[in-house]
Image (tube, rainbow, N blue to C red; front, side):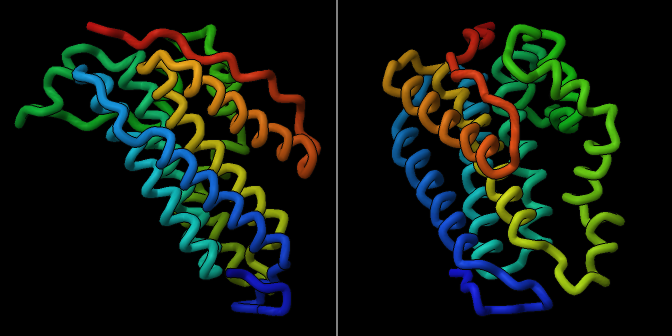
Length: 234
């Protein structure tokens, strides 16, 4: 784990960062245990579950990287967590049925990029909380910085000349982003499997993440998570 007195490549870590890493490890485990053995014979559901599994593995890899103080590589892994999680919703709500039908054939084509999946979801499910503001974010400098940040572009290259490439607050923010991305993707299970236990699980975990955002980063109040719409069944 990370230790307060340890400095690698000019990055001075704090004891609290080790505790934050463990918090994400525990979330990763809870999600794995909660979603195990849930199956449904529907092509959209099958693909959504595959995407959540991929997001979960990426999240596990992110934690190993952060634990070993590979902070830049950890930041880059935020994008595939977000992509896999977004896909779980895109295929459940917005993917054309022709795309779903062709997935398992030699004629299959790749899914849209992250930005296009967000736009498609915001168009077909405008009532879903946060989607419209996320779509609006695509046009901002902050979103362009996010792409550069996760692709190792100028945002990452500029940091290589700094004594502290990632400070503890930024690392904590990355833990929070990784957890929220995974939670967002995994929550699709509550749409495919009508279960009070699943809804209560995600309500609790999303509330916990929202409270941390508010307490640590002076973020806004996060509305109570109330579930997701019924997926497309064609």
